[in-house]
Length: 179
Image 1: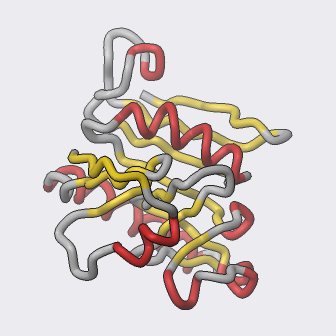
Image 2: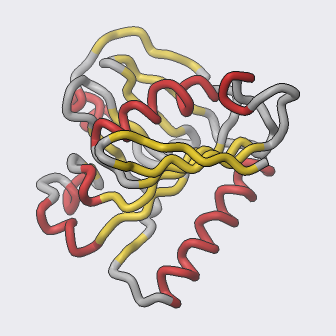
């Protein structure tokens, strides 16, 4: 993971974002963070989760979709995240001012689920994104730590693969974990 240290706004980040890049980028408090492509295992886990959720969306005939690319813009600071998997409510997208042109989501009410598959940047997933997604009002957030990389205070000791499911209850995330 590489950080580009010049501070920029979210709008500058969207304008700067390279097309057809082999990297993913996020904006953390005005700083561009480069994320290399995941490993084969990381990609397999992400693809499996996306496929299973998509199957359920179709089976239950829900008005949801899983976009290929999407940026979540946080309201309180110059940050934007790209979850590994995101489930959007298609009926809410008409209210998203930047969705059609830029694939940017600005309202947590448009998101049904955000999923992060943990890699070496586990602190971002457990510390920052959990707090930021909670603040946005995203009803459910999963952290899939299939290698047990997270800190012991998050996944226990000894470390082991853990699925953490955060559900919004009265404006705060409640977490259930499965090992």
